[in-house]
Length: 244
Image (tube, rainbow, N blue to C red; front, side, top):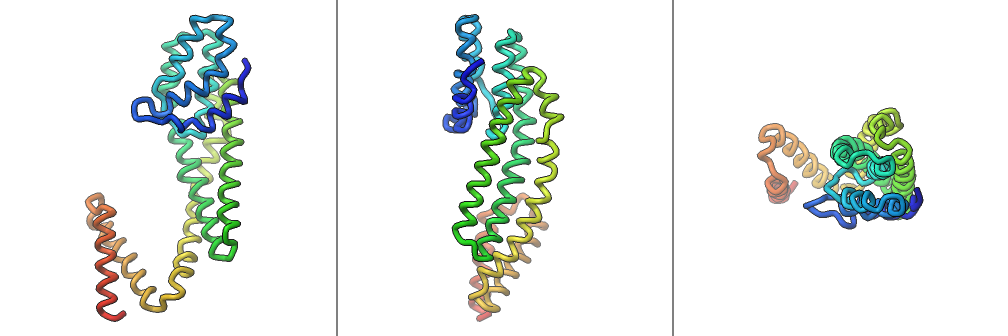
């Protein structure tokens, strides 16, 4: 099977063709095409079916999509029935979406943003932003390489490969790190931002935070972001009118 590096490059841009009808499906089909080239000479009919199948509906976290891409491409060469491959794709959507979101969106990205905020407050300036971008993209690239290779090696056994891999453990550990980073960044950033406002700014910010916590607990889902923003502006105007 050839075309692995071309498939990887295409996989890095898998969200470029995202749409509501097939989600990542079209991007997955485009990334699968280099992996399926050898199948064209072996079984042209199967190749055509595989290309169509690879572009059907699929959705998961894009950073782990290579697991599904590699596994289904391997299954096509092993002549696994098409219906079984389709079921595998469907079954992989939820776990790869949940694990990827926990690992990247709620974990790594949040942790790096918190650390970047801390670094900015401590004087790192634009270097903090550069460090955030470089670190995230290096982790993303290494994960994509691992995911595609693991999927190609595992084939229909990709579920077991995911379960015994480093991903579940990393997803569980990165959450507390992200929480700690954001918990450290918020007071530092607030103190840095309010340093020029004196007691007025500090009292206003604390009042908005206290009222926000209270009304969120009281009203729950009915408190939309628009309503809270209007309430916050009203409180700030009230404190300004009171001369605080």
